[in-house]
Image 1 (cartoon, one colour):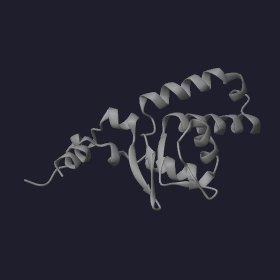
Image 2 (image 1 turned 180 degrees about the horizontal axis):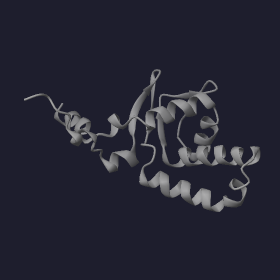
Image 3 (image 1 turned 135 degrees about the horizontal axis):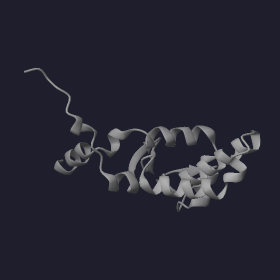
Image 4 (image 1 turned 180 degrees about the vertical axis):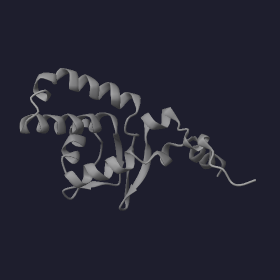
Amino acid sequence: MTDMYDIANLITDSATEVEGVWVPMGSGEIKVAREGNEEYQDYLMGLVNANRALLDQNDKAARKVQRDLMIRAYAKTILKDVRNIQFKGKPIEKYTVDLGIELLTIKDFFNKVQAYAQQFEAYQKKAEEEAVKN
């Protein structure tokens, strides 16, 4: 019998998707939830609905609002915490949504967080079960 791919490998843990996983960043770590999780979708949809008139303009201002809403949604529901991370030479003592917004406005930091949030492997049930065994 040939090796077959088991679709069950794609099953993720919905709680982990919302709670997040710690991922390395230099000598520190950031805790990142999965993009598209239920909390993220609900929060982003509320922001979109509250700003529908601006977003419907489909111009440069609308694109800025869209980016700002995405950053706010990420700061609230995707970037969950940081450990051993500093910003502008000062250690971050406590993660807050306001701090997250400030950090996520840095394009390349946002891109790193987004890349982690899109890696489904970190949220797989299989990966979680293996970690429990070790």
